Amino acid sequence: MVMDKLDILSFEDAIKATGHSACTLLLGNGFSIAQGGGQFTYTSLLEKSGLADDSAIRNVFRILATVDFEKVMKALGDAAQIELAYGDDERSTKFREDAAAVREALIQAVHVVHPGVHFDIPKAQRDACAKFLSHFHAVFTLNYDLLLYWVILHAAAKDFQDGFGLGEEVNGFRTFREDAYCNTYYMHGALHLFATPELEMQKRILTNNTIIDDIADTIRQRAQLPLFVAEGTAIEKLGRIRSIPYLAHCYQELSSVKQNLFIFGHAASDNDIHIYDAICHITSRGFLYAFTSPRLICRKCENASPDMLNAAKILNGNTSMPLPQKCGDDALLEATQW
Image (cartoon, rainbow, N blue to C red; front, side, top):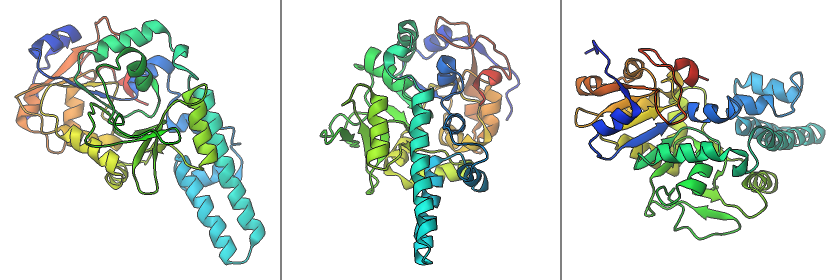
């Protein structure tokens, strides 16, 4: 079934239409772009890493067709071991040094592109985002950066919890527990989340002057990178999600959303089809509201039901929140694609 007509609503009217029933928010990178441009993508981190474009290390990124620092570090580490097996200690040392250089480059990139502290984000923006979030009982984000974390920490902590609250603090980390209250989900990982060798999820908490410094220390001292789902295709991303219990839990929770899902800052790109497969069960018991084209979203849903197609709405950006203003059938794609 194809929607013949789109209902275009203001954000305020959409909230009223839910009848004060539970609403869920799915955030894409447009949320971060609205604050800091396109600097919080892995591609941008690579560009800001200081690794020379003509270097052998950058060539490894190209050969592996990835912008994932962890994948490159693993490949270099494996190469170092292989060279040892072949008796070439010099080349093994070179590969180990290059793996360390990739780690340091990521630290540099994070410092370059990310605000050092939450105060670097104007208070008016933090307050506006907190007001926007106040309409929702749960938030799912596809973003790696700390913008949502900071907004919640300093303006909405009483309303949103991430499931790490019951974990004992050990050396600057708290561990995720499924029995802890959680209504904030980092679907693709985040800068402050680290997976242990046992695949437990740990959150880095503030112990130094800034959380960015703490994250940098973790990368440097533990030789461990934040958890990012940066694979290139939806199939690869879903495989990565299913391999990490915390991410699998987040995905299951998104799949359990039954009604009134608002999507902001996401363009329904092909490499995130797995996200839209998870929400395609939404029926006429609730609505799918999108700050992008619902038709485009529904095209991405292999299992989209007629009820879902009929329930889809598009939101007019005319709202007091800091949202894009353009709207229409294929609206907001320019603002949300990256």
